[in-house]
Length: 141
Image (cartoon, rainbow, N blue to C red; front, side, top):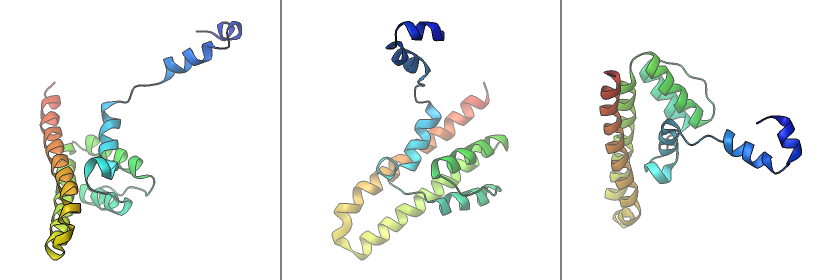
């Protein structure tokens, strides 16, 4: 669509916007799942991401969490270590689940509050395990 058409009909700008708007990619969906605690069951801080980067062998700068996570996935792909990075995330989630269990053991009345978070974190682990399987599938393509 050219600018002359837009001048004839100013309402066409909405059409242009719709054409340029991208659908959410699978990678963006994964980043959202990992960075939104209500979806994942865990909060991954900037410090946690920096530590994950160190475990991966990368020193990443501190910035927005989603950007840091995106960078870590990119570095892991460049280093052919995506599965290792997913394992690092799984270990982190398991650590958080153990913290939730400690809280529940120490304060039994919190079980009602902590159980949904544990379930979300466990489903995140299942999601990450499936991602690891997909890495193997796409590696062969």
